[in-house]
Amino acid sequence: EAEVARAQAACDRRLHSPAAQASKAARRRNSNAKEKLQEAESKLAEMSSKLALLPEKEAEIQAKQAEIDSLQKQLAELQAGPVATERPADTARLADRSEVDAWLAEYDPSKVVAEHFNITLTAKEFSCLRNGECLNSEVI
Image (tube, rainbow, N blue to C red; front, side, top):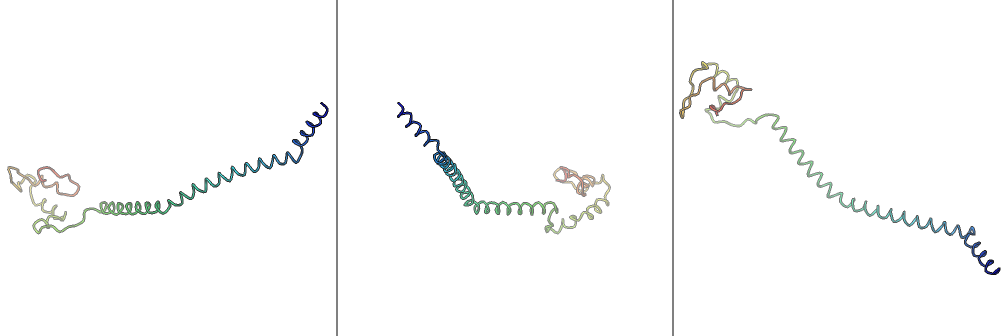
């Protein structure tokens, strides 16, 4: 029995000796270092896959920027107003707003200026051609 107790005490001394405790601590540190290394490798793989997508994403961004530029150009053209186009000779004179105003000023508002397809149009109805006026269905 005394021999068993001595063997047990020797075993306990070995297990709890500073060298054994240092060995345990080293194994724990090694395990933690392995976990951190695995995490770092995982993050590196994730970042590498994202990095591989950058050229594709850059091309998408450039395409979207070109689309935005085109839309901004269209918007600027629309905001600038209608583009002057060539008109037939008989309507070109009336295209200028000042001439439309002058033409309408010559007529009494109740005077009939056109009559076609059972529709009678007066100078007053043609006044919708002035700037800022709403077109009416008879003139259209």
